[in-house]
Image (cartoon, rainbow, N blue to C red; front, side):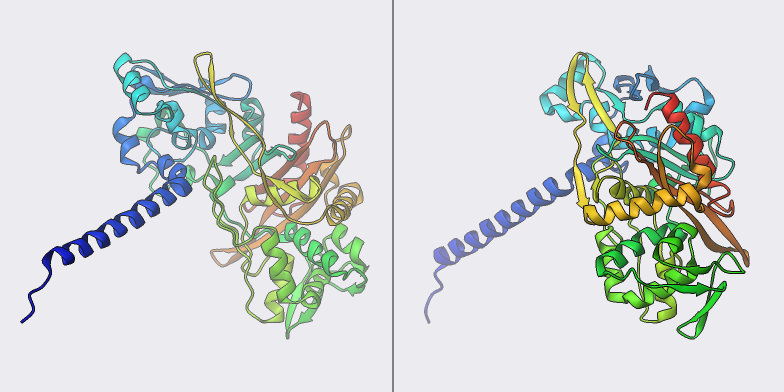
Length: 460
């Protein structure tokens, strides 16, 4: 009987173990590079929860140097003004991780963990503070928005040429100064509706459907809207029960005719609609640098009736306010969407450790299509459903939306407005949603106009 070659077998096993170790090491390196920032920022990271020392944490400021969070001994304190504190609560967050904001996403700067092991040890030994974080938001503008929101919902305003988020407000809010005593079991107030609230887009989705029609060259359709139409054997309705009468490609957008867009969607077909929704980042897993954002949803069943409603912004369409603003920002920016960011600067004393720089997210459509939709949005503010967004002094382009939902058996409406100031000196895109408020033209649109006016007053 031949004796086994033990030395040769051991060498073979050693080779296998080394190869497996190299594969595992390579994989760990890959996922650390790819997802390291996201993992570090989670409140469940044990390194943060054990290493963070509130007394050593840096301060948080808005873009103008307004103090939003600071430490006094082992206690974290927030802005003195109660309304301002609540207005920025979701953007700033809290040290318990109940609401994910700057306290969580930028913890590596606030506690000095970005400077390497030796510097971190030196920081802990000396008792010196971490880095001071400056956000892109204007706290005064956020407070103004908060004070003028009569409904739960969300507002986000961004420089569409750079991606700097100038204002981000989610209502209901919470008080980070007293969060340890907050016994809200539903967690609704801790939900940042700007990036984590998903709503039916309603007629704001007609921007995406219009882009699909322009791409396919389907702009010659004309119909007589009587207020309802049978599509796929079932009835589609317009908010205007008596109908819009004769409408073409332009007037259907300006007057927000559901019947026109339902029939247009069916004519375009599910394949073209889905392909275009993908271009506008529906069903996309967002992985932004400064915050976590839920993906938006666009799906089809194969039925013309469902396709008709999907093109109108109902069926199973879902979008976050941040994403809806980004869609509009892309139209304003010639088809290119910039990545939204909330971190402006990080300083360790006089040394700057991080400075904001713009990043392109994606091209959602061509410059020609973006220009055409921009003109349609301008006409909508000039003489369509969004006239209350017109503030004078700067050109506002926009689209209203009224999104139906069922609450306790009753049909209600979320009020939407998305739009932008068409001015290179004031390049801002906005999304406003007010939950259960009613028609977009009656509630979200005038609020958007007020916000644009306030931004101008503040020098933006």
